[in-house]
Image 1 (cartoon, rainbow, N blue to C red):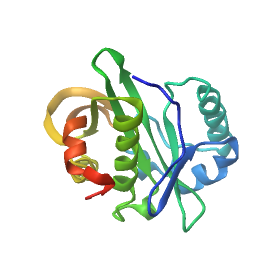
Image 2: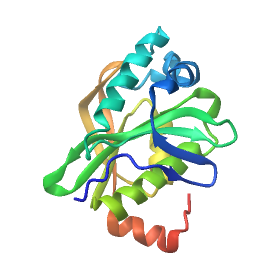
Image 3: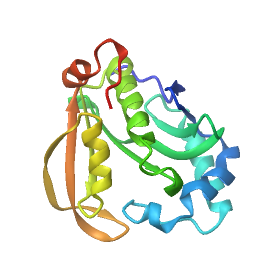
Image 4: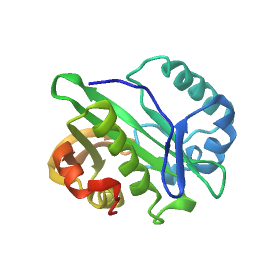
Length: 193
């Protein structure tokens, strides 16, 4: 794989860019402090903006590594981050990346996450050289699976008690897409989501 680090990406409505420490207030306000947003994630809702700032300092430090991929999802019309998307697990030997994402509740069901996921998949497939992208979700959170399907991912099965999120051990639905499948769906740069 050709690791390039977190590069800025742009779509019709979004700018995906590296986080900065200055994003702490928006991250805290827009999604990280909301227990409904974090209900099915691996990290609990933040209770203090200073803790978000500490987290973002660690993210900014990780950007020194070429294999770090963590984006702020910035809605152009708002001009500030409303969510995040990143690679949560890289498996170099099989050229695979697992992605994870979250977005503030005010922006649910507006097609923002599929737009962000598609942009990240395009970057990982076409520039980094990933061959397989996967994602999984707590089966009690089917909306996340809907995003995966909209992005062309295929349901592969359910990992029984295969993940631990804020609700504890849970069954996790696994989805994936291969580079050849993505390129067939999105040929010529068109995004059909």
